[in-house]
Image 1 (spheres, rainbow, N blue to C red):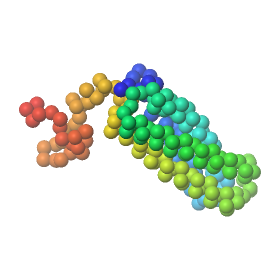
Image 2 (cartoon, rainbow, N blue to C red; image 1 turned 90 degrees about the vertical axis):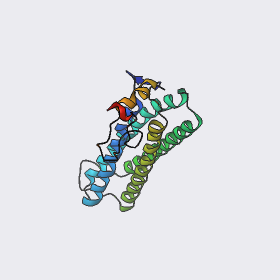
Image 3 (cartoon, rainbow, N blue to C red; image 1 turned 60 degrees about the vertical axis):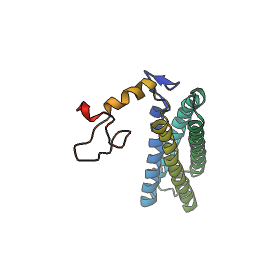
Length: 189
């Protein structure tokens, strides 16, 4: 089934989720740098990547919800989609709380300001929990696409076997939907 929100048969939601995921992973890395160096610049930079991630996630959520509620999904893919959406909304809420906590610290262009240890710990823990939830959410998103072919046009699925790779003779292979086994007959070689 083709995504209800697409450009030239390419679903938009997977394109949009890269921005928030990348921003949030960057925020986590910046938090590690801040905790390692104590330089408040990295604390402030992490705040801005969180804000970018939240903005991008809200846009991706709109497109994702349109797909979730307009595609004719079976019971299991819909359940997985709702779990995926719920996790993402929890992640956005955690990052909004994280940003509010960070805004409470007066960090400006003067680099001599200190971030209280409790604030640094809370923001890091919130970031860590959010990243772990993001991994699970991504897993569920992948389940929808790779297990149930959500937002994958039927004609793409029909053409897929002819493009699957074949293992080298004597090797088990790891690619393709059949675990590296060619869907073609041995007579086709």
